[in-house]
Structure formats: structure tokens, C-alpha cells
Amino acid sequence: MYPVSNLDELRLGKVKSLYDSNTAIDKHTVDTCDLSALGLAGDEQAESFHGGEDRAVLQYDFEHYADLAEQFPESTAYFVKGGFGENFVATGMNEHNMCIGDIVKVGSVVLQVTHVSAS
Image 1: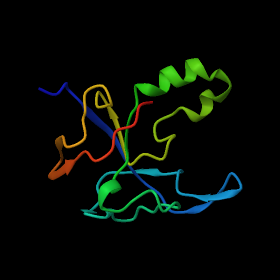
Image 2: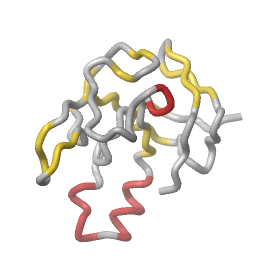
Image 3: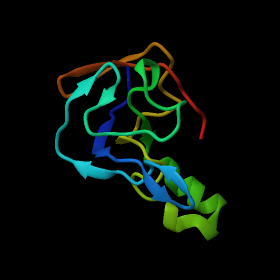
Image 4: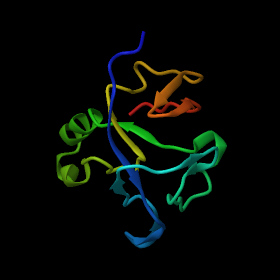
């Protein structure tokens, strides 16, 4: 049985020049969006290793930001919801309780975990 998880924010972004490179890390919150096998409508990725069928959505557990802020106090301003460019800001869903192949339902969409990274 999965622990209780909450989807706190849904975020989308466009590629733009930031930090002397092209990036789509600066995403904004939205209430709804359409999702296809290739990702969220209106969301862009600057790097070829993001997006596509196996990485259509990026989810990150917000609870990790507190640990990162403790480890890297000089960078705490970056450890905010959406700070890693995630599409789904969640709490309670992370590499400790999710495995590749797990299936989750978010609203009316069914997703399958294809990649898990340790924070």
C-alpha cells in the first residue's frame, strides 16, 4: 500500500535564457493542463534527456528541499516548490516508497514510474 501523497502544484514552463544557458527550469503553476504520452501541453524542455515517452513528467517530493537547505545553506533560496523544474510538486511520493513500474493516478490520468533518482 502506498503512503498518502499530495500533489501540491502542477507546473509548466517555456525554454528561456537563464543563468547563461537555455533552460525551462523556471516553471509556473497552473490549475489544469492536457497530458499526452510525450508530456504536458504547454511545457518545454531545453535538454534532450528530458521529456519523451519515458520522461513525460518530472515529479519531485517537496519534503526533500528541507534536507537540501540544511546541507547547502548558502543555496536555500533555490530550494522552493518548483526549484528543480518539476512538473508535479508532491509530498509523500519519493524514491523511498516508489519503484520503477509503479502505476499512480493523478486526477483522471494514469502514469507509470519509469525513472527514480535518489535525492
